[in-house]
Length: 137
Image 1: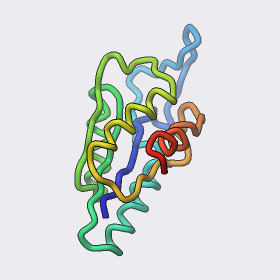
Image 2 (image 1 turned 60 degrees about the horizontal axis):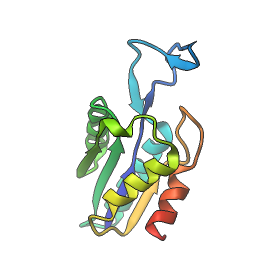
Image 3 (image 1 turned 90 degrees about the vertical axis):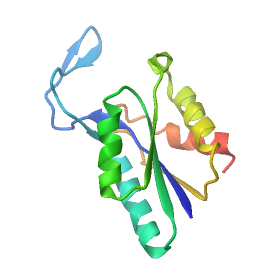
Image 4 (image 1 turned 30 degrees about the horizontal axis):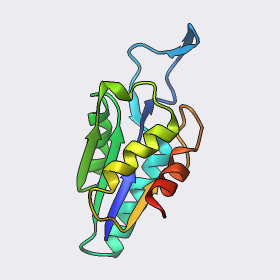
């Protein structure tokens, strides 16, 4: 079984933040794997354990620092990691992000796509459902 897990890097939920010019500011604070996405990675690992021969690919979109989040998912048990990066991705809305993820996912056969319930930074819960629409699943 080929399992895809979409993950997001978010500001550590314990970090102190300030709002400057309408944007979150927390210089020097660490970034983490979104907790809900971590649950999705854990579920993929459980499925892989139950179905030998399965492979897990994690996909994340964002700046260079996302590599650390992808490494975390690999350390948890994912087999492959895909980092999507382009300066043009800055400021995209959730629908556009889902379309980019869907385009990448469609490049390789998959049996299951997992996403976390929502990201703890924006709490929008839109990427997963939009991704399902673009993938026609």
